[in-house]
Length: 152
Image 1 (tube, rainbow, N blue to C red):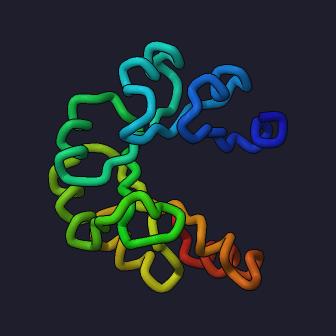
Image 2: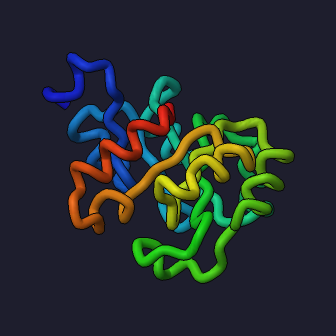
């Protein structure tokens, strides 16, 4: 928090509402098997940023009634970091969820500089990457390559 506060970059904690509360984080990202959204919102308050992972069109439809700040579409492509999720959404799935959702959509799963433009064109508003940087031979170079895509 001390590092990010002066930069105006929000700190979001993955899955752990208790940790977010303990450190005064700006919000959380929760998955389908984490604490329910209503409980997270009640505990964190109306100003907290809350993102929710959706793994299907049905999940996205359920989220339409929630005051979520963004939906994490996962996985767009098969990835080792989401090995428990066997079915990918693909570009078609991203497009279908874009058609039914009013929320900002953040794509994750199997993304790299070669496929990110297609994912954005399919309807995602932004992306989150893990393997594209962490598994790269040169993580710094990989991050620089991704930053050239001008993704917000």
